[in-house]
Amino acid sequence: MTTLTVNGESRSIKASPDTPLLYVLRDELGLNAAKYGCGLGQCGACTVIVDGKAVFSCVTPIMVLEGRKITTLEGLGSVDAPGPMQRAFIAEQAAQCGYCIPGMMMRAQALLERDPHATDATIRTELQPHLCRCGTHMRILRAISRAAEEMKSKAADARTER
Ligand code: FES
Ligand code: FES
Image (cartoon, rainbow, N blue to C red; front, side, top):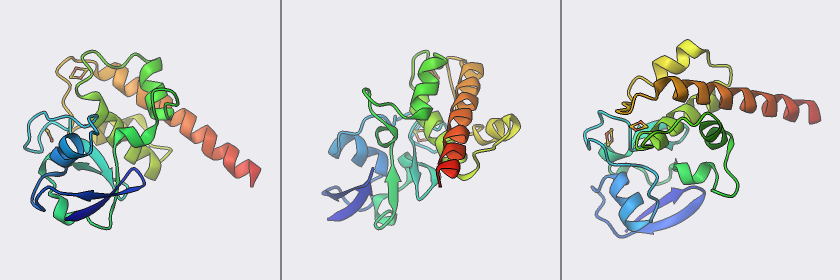
């Protein structure tokens, strides 16, 4: 039995320790935001955040994740209370088929958490491992910049209140 911390909750996992995280998220925990695209670490559809870093869950066995903090898109907000990244993607209508979007959002979230002032050039470079077959790249970039603005102003408000 492996114990994982997913979106702040401790979960006991029955799958064998060499099972990739993506299968555990989708098949055992019912967290379906992360998608299977290539299964080879080449498309970004399965991206989640582990200890603040974007990780391809399709090639990451759960045995290396005990004691680490895993965040999936479900951990950024809900349908009723979407987080800043999710709100920005909705506002910019950045999804066409939507398959690539959860992975894009998770890598962008990890970037902005460590560098809220990331430039457009940095955002573009960071998102390079992600493929979008629909070609909505410009909307995706606009959504991430929008999320960055909201996250920056929230951080500034929090500093003012201290
Ligand atoms: Fe993991 Fe493509 S499904 S990188
Ligand atoms: Fe369809 Fe990106 S919106 S793959």
